[in-house]
Image 1 (cartoon, rainbow, N blue to C red):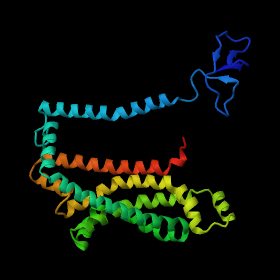
Image 2 (cartoon, rainbow, N blue to C red; image 1 turned 90 degrees about the vertical axis):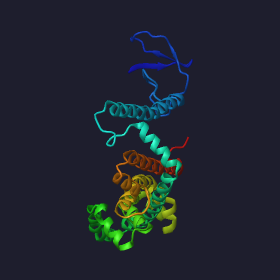
Image 3 (cartoon, rainbow, N blue to C red; image 1 turned 120 degrees about the horizontal axis):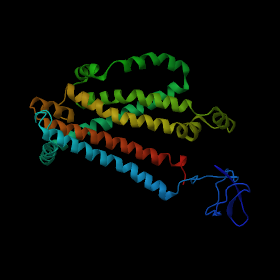
Image 4 (cartoon, rainbow, N blue to C red; image 1 turned 45 degrees about the vertical axis):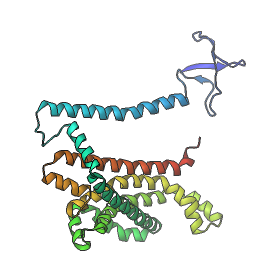
Length: 304
């Protein structure tokens, strides 16, 4: 950090007594709030081109790491250390994926799982949001429900999935219910935390303006809690896929979890890998959709 003075002609010169350096023209006005008595050896702000390059470099990491993982997988299978029925080669998995896609097996089971995930995510998020709002507004209700909510998370979904399948049958409803239970707790907690994080002075401002409960909810509480709520939705989007697969493992006639069970019984390991990779794609697609919705709804936080 070097002490310097700004000249009238738009240049920056060293103070007397310091090492003489050539005058550096100021190409852009200094940002508001920056002390003009100090100059930095590097730019204070990154230009849009630099930010774009950094963004491109970050997004290049994923395909390069994926390619490295596939190459390592191919080398491991080519070495012969593991039998082919335990770890098939990437070529065999790719061929099995194309075969299952061509005969409609993969699409039929993936569509069933996707329907369960979407319905479970929507139902669980809706109920969790309503309950989270009620818990955030009432301390007595929170004290009443907190032990039951914690107890519900202490029980693994795998343990209660057989009971739900017995009570509600092996149809669609039991899978949707398992997905909703998986999503419920993180969305409820995030909703409650987001609503309680609203500053009290803003609530006082709305009260001084004689805003109704609905106006306060729509204009203050929902926008303030939306970042935390959408963060919980991102977690729920991935957990809902797990809930659907758990339900299909227990009792199902179709779905990717059912397909994994069938392939495992037939020692069709490439088909197991195909179903697992399809589940990863479903979870990634749902996560990306929630992330896209978050960027659309929270554009007011980052104005251009």
